[in-house]
Length: 146
Image 1: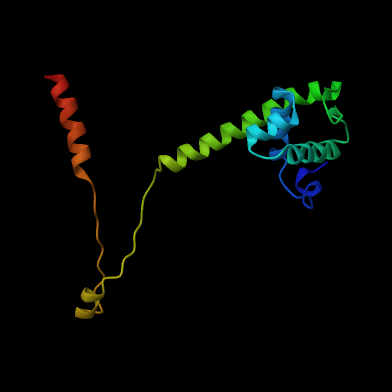
Image 2: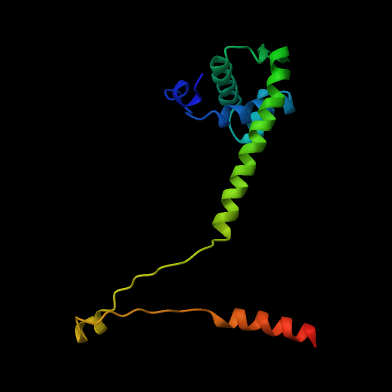
């Protein structure tokens, strides 16, 4: 099954959401506890589990109004679900690292109307570099050698 096409008409459209819900229900032992943990109602938690069961074509929990009982499939799926969620967290952390610590060149274009009115044929290029950080680092290394 292709999760991109199989879930395209669902209300959540994303397999990670019901998988996270499943993991919390598995770990906490109840729909209401998992719902509180994720800040949704028990009905929403149950609905997400139902969608996941429908997608997988198996029962993960045998449910009554008072309890949920695990199935063998639930135990098997849990270990795989943890790996998937861990991989998603690692990918998210990698993206955040790049976002928080950008690298490369930054090109800025700016319109300087007062200058442009003086001479239409002249192009102005501005270069700005923070030399102080390089100078400070160089001085620190030099003082360590002394």
